[in-house]
Length: 234
Image (cartoon, rainbow, N blue to C red; front, side, top):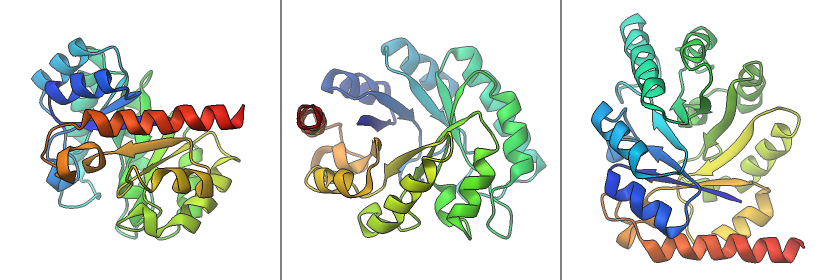
């Protein structure tokens, strides 16, 4: 099980690595669901860690529907992220009728050539998740989808996540589960859904505060669960 942790500062990045995280999603605007961080923060974060950093590419929080000006800004951001040496990018785009905007996705992927790509929780607003998964699987650059199974809290979407994981086995896409996971719920959630990658934000912050500091103990407990799972499987 791979653990991805949200970071909004260099301090977060260092704390996440020291505590045992496997990958970083770097954002700003935690309360808005994540926006593109500054170039200075991206560069400093990359220099501060050996962990792969996935940078959020999201110009605003109004919606996941983007016009030509938005797309131009996103492409420019992706190119800078690539120059700065990040491992990957995180983005998503939808049409007005809540389908993946394949034209926008194609343009963003062209700019992101060579980078790892996560399609973010825009996926949770699609009209049909199986249809959307099939559409995104046509883009072999997309490595994973961050999703809560179409619910605000992924713990309310156990069956949906289980089905998504099953469908994903027929694709090249990994399902990354996030939003609402807790240390206490993790063992049962992983066992019931079969997810292999999990994404934590407020769940690994002090007192569950999305603006709080990284909780070293929380990450270590998740890491211990992963170790115990490996021993059980062996």
